[in-house]
Length: 122
Image (cartoon, rainbow, N blue to C red):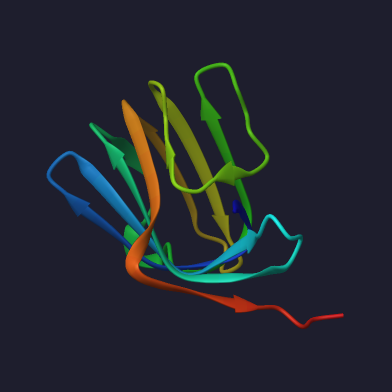
């Protein structure tokens, strides 16, 4: 399963000490059999993180997302995903909000009861 930031929807961005937890209410994914849809929910934790951006406004549909894992900039993330080291994440929301995060590590995985909903969009 591959996760893509574009067209995903963020439910919340919650700071917990030095960790920033981002919960996606609808994470755009592609399964190994090429089906496209949304995983509900998906949790991303950025640990030992420093961020800029109005967290209260960082919700809703993403218009763009970029991740740098060391020198790599993967277009999609296999799930579950754990970074090998420091990361930088930039998210741009359809409402105009922007979030930039620098962290020592990133873990991204479906929540325990996550379900896949196939997209039937043309």
